Amino acid sequence: MINMAEENDRRGLLDGREANTRPYSPPNEYDGALFHEQGKSPKEKIIMYLFISFVVVMVMITTIISLYRGSKVDGTYVLLGVSIISIGLVEVVLVQWSRSGELPAEKLWFLYFVGICIALESMLTDVLLFHRPEKV
Image 1: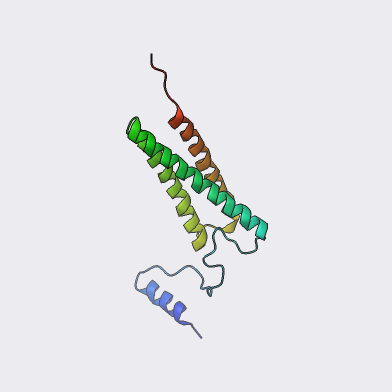
Image 2: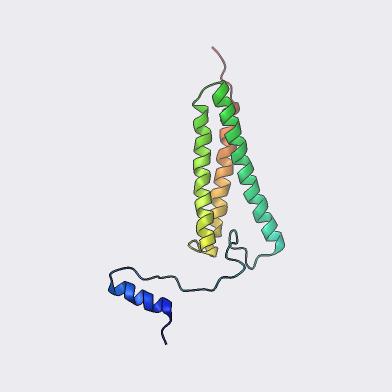
């Protein structure tokens, strides 16, 4: 007996539409999980949330400092804050892909790598924002 999803896929193929390639899986408690939390120990979850919090705080600090320096010194400093926010949006997209299942759990290292790169860029941007050139 053919279920309704398979029948719709067959009709879609005949109409020239693409078939739904994802297999149906019933909803479970991990559907809204951040970074594939199923099967992780509480210690791993805490480390994951601390890492995410660290990256978010670093981006917020850099954004606040760039807005302040942009208003007091030069408006181009605001672009540094815009830059760090735009790169942070890449991490948000990766998190959404991870939650939706488009990014497999084996590729979680990539999310951590991007997070480390964002934190490093944030630190280097903060150094640049605090730099005061000497007047000649």
